[in-house]
Length: 176
Image (cartoon, rainbow, N blue to C red):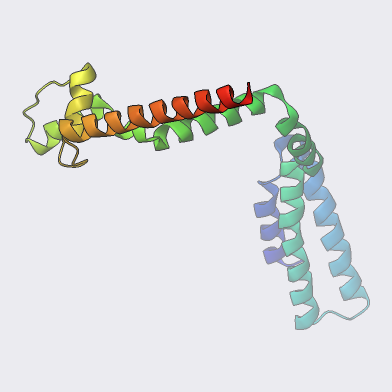
């Protein structure tokens, strides 16, 4: 039997789990040995049949991976794990993390703005915390919002609320 065949089988052998390795190698070696000796005895050995035998040995890689991954266990895991409480908790934590990281308030975080201001100022850092930091973040050039703009927005929102309340009271009084 060709040394190339044995080398391929030995390389594939390392993929197979240790406890199954010896049995797996004996099985594949016996199969290839019988095929090679059949070709010799039947006087069919040629360059073409040797290449065919080498191509058959590539199947040893997929068989070795099959033994390593244990297809039944993998499919069972994929079927049952998404139904477990642990998977649900992990999915919720990931979803909340993505929502929090993408929320507009994460961009207005005073600590983040302070860190960015420290980098921009070349390491000189002025502390901004709490509501003062939030106001500083809103009035920074990045957001282009002045305290007057904030007051105008707040007044507009309050006016809309008053109008909605008045409309609701009017509708209620008309029904009764």
